[in-house]
Image (cartoon, rainbow, N blue to C red; front, side, top):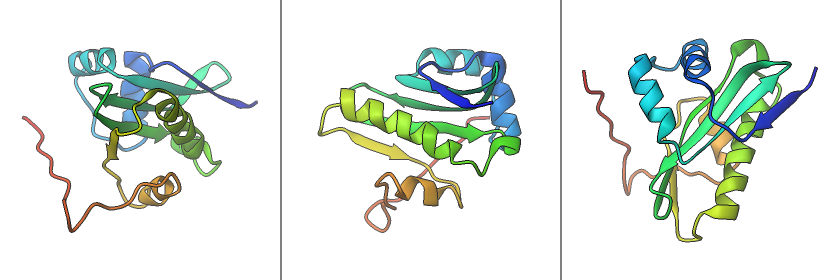
Length: 135
């Protein structure tokens, strides 16, 4: 059975399931529903009739874009599928985003090795990533 990357964000249920399976921080269903509706672009990795991976781009559509939610279920990892998801997202940006767009992401180790294959570089020491989770 092969894998397909389709150009749509996953359902809320798949999004929540994939984040949990991939070890990403879970979100409340209400937050997931609102967030998915505000995505600039998203893809879902399908195996058979099941979503087994995903990736999204969020941003303002012109100046700033951020790649988020790159995840592949553990049973399907190690097959180059994260690279397939990133390729689809980057292809979309190269075709639709202005050439001056700033594209960023937060990379967990060891996933940073995937992102360097697409031209991403650490921004330190010039700038550092900063974050806050509202609770």
